[in-house]
Length: 240
Image 1: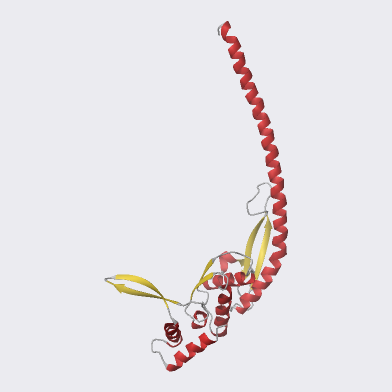
Image 2 (image 1 turned 90 degrees about the vertical axis):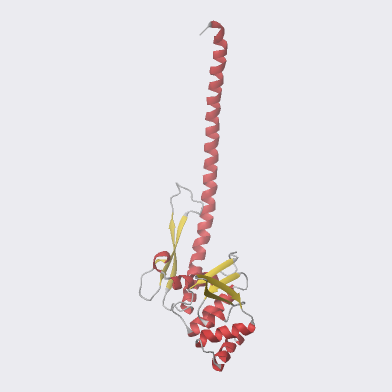
């Protein structure tokens, strides 16, 4: 290196040293910000955990009572709260939440995601939503097979619970039971037809007369009788 280049080289080295010292200061600042964020997360997670533990017992008890009304008598619903490691802050809080269910008397509770059938899952979901009515903001809900394995008085209860749930949001329910269908604020018939070798599905909203006819068909089969129509009208008149 030529003598005349030494001054410029010195300046370049000093600039690099300043940058390294600045990087160290930035790292210290970032470490401090990370620690503050970790402490803020810990406080928020602790607050959320306390609220979860307080609400879990109430929700579990209310849901257990409701699934009994919905045809799962003797079943039990519980909420398991398992602490997570604080070393890895989770955006969902400091616990893992697992819904546990025993669908029948004498069975040990197992994770809902592993044991519930389609119909049971729909009824448990309905029970949870009814138990938490007014606390969440889900605008649209879809229930399929909620009437699987039930009938009679239980079907009527399911229909009434769905209707209550639908007063504050949009609830869509696929059902084959007239007791459930009669409780809807609106009634749609889903049908399939083949045209030119292609099967097409059609959804039709029913007016009052068509609705009575459809409920009568659901009650009595293909041949509509006066008794079936009268029974259908009674279902509609009993809606409250």
